[in-house]
Amino acid sequence: MPATQFDITPEERASFSAFIKRQLFRGAPVTLKANVNLQGQTAVVTGSNTGIGLECARQFLDLGLSRLIIAVRNVPSGEIARKLLLEERSPSEHRIDVWKLDLSRYDSIQSFVKQCETLDRLDIFVHNAGISKGKFELNPITGHEESVQVNYLSSALLSILMLPIIKERNPSDRPGKLVIVSSETAAWSKFKEREMTPLLPKFDKPETFNQGEYGTRYWTSKLLGQFFVTELVKHVPSSAVVINMCNPGMCYGSSLMRDFAGTFSGFMVGIFFRVLGYSASKGARSLTDAACNHGPESHGIYIEDGKLQPMAPMIYSSQEAGTMEKVWTETLEELKFAGVHDIIEKLGNTKSG
Image 1: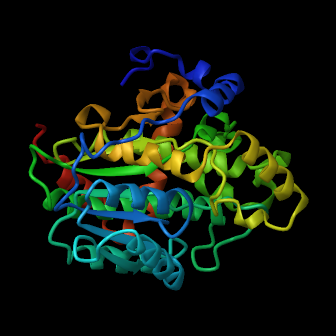
Image 2 (image 1 turned 60 degrees about the horizontal axis):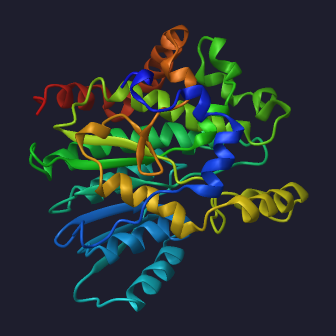
């Protein structure tokens, strides 16, 4: 969707004043069971043991969801979440399973996807899990910086591998949903690394991490995600899977900032989050809204406060077309071991509805 189709420009939406206004006065609408009934449906929510992921899971169950998959790195923590959710409702009406998914490991992602292949149906897949790192760390297996690995590369792999499963479990006139949790911070990233070729390996250099500005690697990892989805939907029609992104806003009560626990910066950020942040429940309304209230018109689009909104300004810049292509090409090259090219090609042959 061109930037001109929105009621606000990408630059206006990316401003700090717009962010403050959203946090103080806006938020996604509550999705009511009178309007949405998920009975008989199955949903997967990653990172659903705490925070907005847990609250999204709770909201799905409140809408009558029959089967929920809690996808988490820490299975015991997921079991605790499962018990909390079942305390509030009848186990005979809602089946809740806890499946392991470690986004720092490609083999864990592939094993999780194989487990998803056993599902009889899969209506909704919400990819919420992510991290925000306070210091530079390389993933010991892939050699990539951990934020980019988890928030971007692993997210891209998981998304691509799940697409055929979601497509096969739903008819083309009612395609399944893949909701990827994004962030307004994508619009704040300066993405200084984009001038480099190859681009992705530059993130693995300690001198590029945050570059003296708090949290900027997280922002950039979310911007990479927006580049990726924008390119992905050029190859995957909405009749195969509806792919959209949503912004839950800045929320307290989340484990996203766990890497900053016990630090002065973490203390100060915690105060800021508590003063301006949404509750996890309010933030999760954005995930639920994106999954339940938006159809093919939201394919490849960013949803905020219940409305289709522009992504980061760079997404719409003709000067960044080469950057987007470079990110896409390098990402598929990184993930070629999993057969991503063939998956995307086959999905691209799906007739548009």
